[in-house]
Image 1: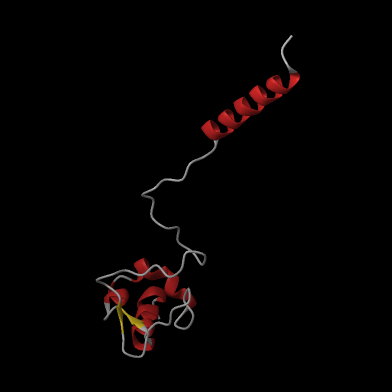
Image 2: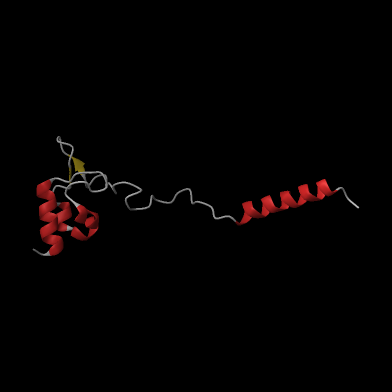
Length: 98
């Protein structure tokens, strides 16, 4: 009969190996999740920062309102960012059809 300590150690090693093989792994190249925990979904080349710190799309959001659904919370405090009021109002008019 084997030593009980070596049997316990062998079982522990097998359990650790099984756990490491079957646990879900993160994808290395996956994009960040959208939502409040991941921050503002900034779009380089489309959104620009104004001298006062607000974001603008220079009218792009008004033409493509469906791409900026996160602006529903705006124009203040959209995932920690402030949107240019004129840009946001033009987006709102086109998004809601007002």
